[in-house]
Image (cartoon, rainbow, N blue to C red; front, side, top):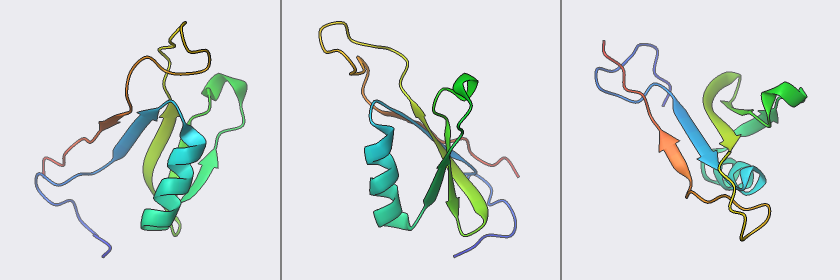
Length: 87
């Protein structure tokens, strides 16, 4: 279902912060059919846009808090931020 106008109180963007962006990309591709594109610029830090068809629908980004006891792993669990439409 494609919405052409905001739904009051409905989600308007999804942003996921995770320690495993490649796994998240695979998961959401299988679940929703999202196609992901990671910004190749070093200053983007691995920020990834997810698309459904030609529309941007979400973003995935690496967690920045690292756990020194587990190299390469995030200290915090994955987090999702979902802003809501006000109109």
